[in-house]
Image 1 (cartoon, rainbow, N blue to C red):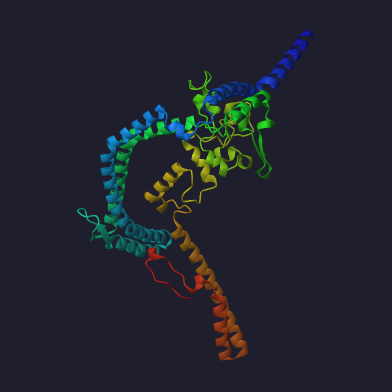
Image 2 (image 1 turned 90 degrees about the vertical axis):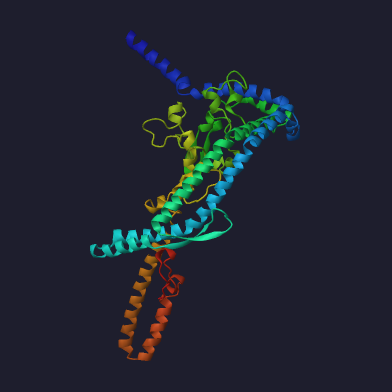
Length: 440
């Protein structure tokens, strides 16, 4: 009995500890946040109310400005030369892109016909594909000695493809060289701009004092920082730990370092930073979207970082890695050709298009011609079925009435009724088919 009583007492003690502390690690995180945020507010109070003009006139900013200008001037001549080469390549690329894409589009259609045709028709389409590849087109290519003037260059598809790829690779090489050349000056400019941004607090001394006073009554709970979006049945508790996510101040990890602002940050300091793109939060309100709808993870979990970030082996939607954050934009903006604020995603889309990936991997927004052609073919089939039904009705009415004139009038009326859509009146198979418009 004594042993059982001791075991029950130990179990109760462990349960109480686990309930009060073990399952609530965020309590210690919030206490650490209050201490660090208080030190940060004290450190910026002296800078409060400083204008941009005053910061730019300070010796520190002037030194950074001179450093950035010197770095830019040092490589300006070589950078301008590289940009001139890029411009010349781009003119040639512009000249060859349209004829190449037209020929490639027509070949894509023929290859599709080869894949879907019967065995007896495949050879005919293969011959069409070979003829199309050997077909010579004229390209108005800028001259090497005078890019303002053009010369006619005749190329078949293979030459077009090679020229297009070579020009694109040459452009990428020159742009890469230019980026490497400008890297020191860009870093110097970033250092200057970061200094200006960090000196402009944006809060008055009164606002900072008020924020410091609010820490005395800080809400150490979950519900005070939880986001509930009832419309989507969403409960998001990320800001129980990420307490500066919506801060109007620009707070980086070194500002919340354990040793004080400007010291070496730890993992908690990185959790206390402000959102890197406040403009994005103006478009995607947190109280409407939450956090996990964009970043993934388990927004309800608060017992550990592993579970909260969705790294648990049983959670199907782990949080995106930092370098892959913009993948979340693709969930809602998949049909956008360009998504504002998602530069990495836009570069990926550019690469997808430049490499011609949609030739094999169809994707909405990148192969509109094929999608439109498929829809047009479907509409043609529906209209042909409708016309056939109308012809049958005409014959039945003609046989019943025995009046040729009336049947001709009925035929015109029914044909007009069945061909009232713009698609029926004129269906165009696009330039890529090389066909002519047809009337029904």
